[in-house]
Image 1 (cartoon, rainbow, N blue to C red):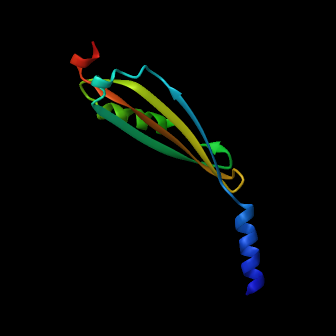
Image 2 (image 1 turned 90 degrees about the vertical axis):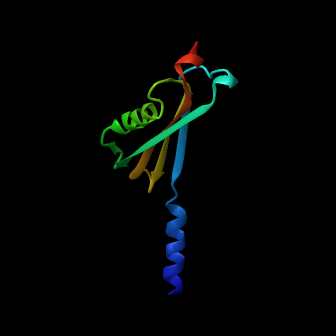
Image 3 (image 1 turned 135 degrees about the vertical axis):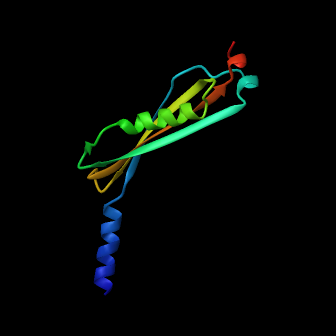
Amino acid sequence: MMKSLVSLMICLTLLPGCMTVSSISTSQIPPAAARKQKVVSSASNFVFLLIPFGNSFVERAREDLERQCPRGAIEGMQTKHQDTNYFFGLASKQEVVMHGYCLSPRSKG
């Protein structure tokens, strides 16, 4: 019993996950007076054996962000892409998080 517990603890310490994050700003941040409505969206995708099965999850996040601002424009947008790797990269999760500010047509100009 004790030997199997020690073996389990060794395995758990040898199989850590790690996360990498990269971020990029895609537009200018609007003036403070115009930043009334913050919009946030995220989507993820599972990767197995280092093979990503498409990248449509990025489009889903963008479409969700646009639905939150139907009559305005999104400014000050920041997109963060992060990868979480499990079990030495055999399985991982890609995630994109987008946020910005919805400006009404009047506050844009």
